[in-house]
Length: 289
Image (cartoon, rainbow, N blue to C red):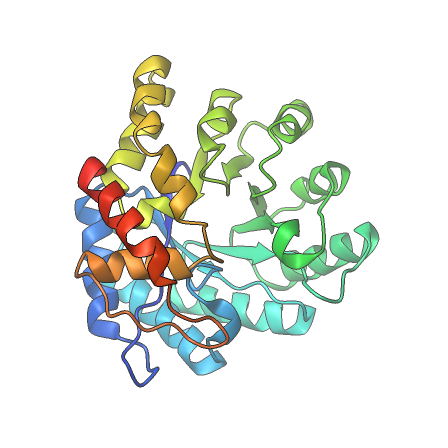
């Protein structure tokens, strides 16, 4: 189920800070029509840290209902509180999400045994496919391969989103986990190499902007057309980089605003993209769209 280009969707907002559900539906249609292979809602790119519980649940509910089975819906339900993560994961199951994405607990920085027990508690508490999410540059917490291998033996843990950018990790994981354990890149800059090494897909920020191209690159790799995939990805290297000139999702939300897909609002403590990057993104879009 979890393969190809899966978009890490932004959460569109009105100027007063409320969630813009009309634009949310527009984005979901945009990704279905442009061949995204799945959608992650209320993840890092969806501003999960500043989305409150009621909004979080509503975004999952409306996303699942509106997609209506057209592509897989993965709900971000991770938290640095195990109890909170179990609660959100249970709500996602109740609302019909296809899977949950569970980031490592941030700020409290558990050791490897703490990480294992955290994810095991969610696995034991909720029967829904669960994808681990390792992004130590944001969380201050690194989920080691040995711990991933232990967790992969649990019934509901079906994959990992690895956003470390360290391609060597996938090689050791592939030797130890079952073939049906999904290995998903969380780093647009290195995802092509990740897939070349046997990865199954990418959860992508860039796919917010060019979903069809990201889908096609993945498809080319899976069908053995590596050189074509590399040529296509070469066209996106500048865009990959521009999406991270300031903390995600600042650049991608401004880009989607420029594309008339959403309004420009982003929640504090994040602020809108510095104007010095605007023309660079506009020029880049003229080359790739």
